[in-house]
Length: 401
Image (cartoon, rainbow, N blue to C red):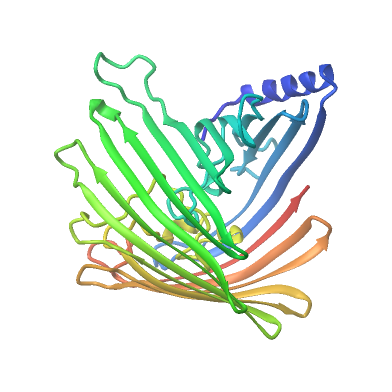
């Protein structure tokens, strides 16, 4: 994520000035939230982890004409001081132009700038929700009855003037294609390539995957198969070749909605079979609140989450039910997580109970609790490995406008 202190303010003024000069349509909005949490992380040497935090994400959308528009989103917080002049940071989260080239022979749009990007595999590799907003250019077009999405991004620039023959950028190329074959039946394919030239060496990572979704009766089914490969130039690093498969089904039962997800990702004790990820932030890919993360648990106690990139792999079964309890949308979710390799197999179990109360249009409070029992195969089990229980209570007051 690109961080600036003065530039976002200047950019905001520039956007407003341009909007005035060109009589453009300007829309202001944002997301304002206050989090509170109290978590027992299972460390007997420390008190519970507790805090209240505020974050504000204002945005401005400017439409110059039917073909050209701009989007700017800032992030203020989370705050680290709760009194007097609040100490915080101001960050540019998104900042891009969007346009429709006249020369494009098909219906297409192009974005250029700091662009929110998420993978097409359930946010398991990289997610804009977790601040994967690289600088680059990307486009989407209607091709062959389907939707083509392609982009090239500089995820890191490092030095502008590296030593001769020592390029140090990290470049990402993405290509996604999805097509509806019949009513409620669609398939897709993706290819991603990341080249890291840091420290004068070159590491290449590639991902190739297919996905699909369909309605089978009243059951909505989706899934994907993804393979990754990492070729590391450093003699101390291990080349990797891994794969992951996901199957998910969603079905309404009476007045509830039941969802079940099964994920199996390869792994090994030497790390050679792990699945590579594009970034460290994988998004809200699961159902639970500690071993996977939901919006209201995306707080200070989210350090025990796991993902498909675990060195020893992962086999996970998760289920959730969504229903109304006393008029409140409520979710109960549970998951069992195991390692694919190694002498210790138990990553942990996780239980989440969460509800939402709508205070007024666009303003709601979400609250609940989560409990996870982490096993010796968890990445944070320590050395020697120990079992650990994590319990958390949380609440999030959020307005979106």
